[in-house]
Length: 217
Ligand code: DX5
Ligand code: ZN
Image 1 (cartoon, rainbow, N blue to C red):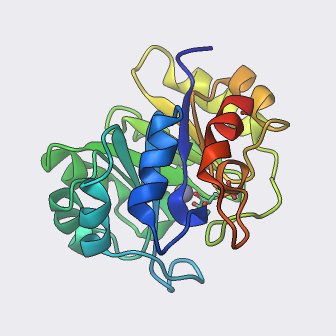
Image 2 (tube, rainbow, N blue to C red; image 1 turned 30 degrees about the vertical axis):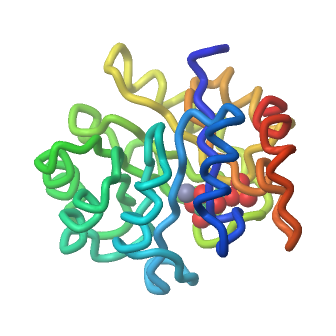
């Protein structure tokens, strides 16, 4: 289905060569570029801050989808907006005021996303559907690439029904590969994040096969 978007996560890319990696995935069919921001507090891992995201922006020609796994979120929204994010996603679990956070993201002119950890029910976003452009359903506990997929197709189906005819994407993040993707799309997902399935991890990156990996999903 051509309306399904693949968003490779550069968390699994070669960290010494992001420019080349971003060019390779975009030239070979990536629809969006997914950037995982981790703070060592909300999740047990550290990745990129706004200056790194601004550097990625110079290479991303499609859509830069910035997934904030940080708490608090609000003090950093402006910085990630200025860094060039097109979509800024915050976790519903990251604070008491996700509603305010989504309003603040929209106020920067960027698209707003809300992410749900595997343990968080679909109902957590019931009152946020008119404030969100995207709901990110985590199918791993956030923090690392390459983890085992946790089935959330029931939650995806529930969310698609709750969304109704609103223009809200359902994005899946974690363990997406050619085996798990079809069921998620059938349940109503339309954006698939994939880290290890595209980059295959390891120390030897092979940009020439990213297109085949993207097409296989
Ligand atoms: C997990 C991140 C994901 C991760 C996905 O905390 O939010 O975006 O990179 O990686 P894979 O596709 O390897 O599960
Ligand atoms: Zn992510």
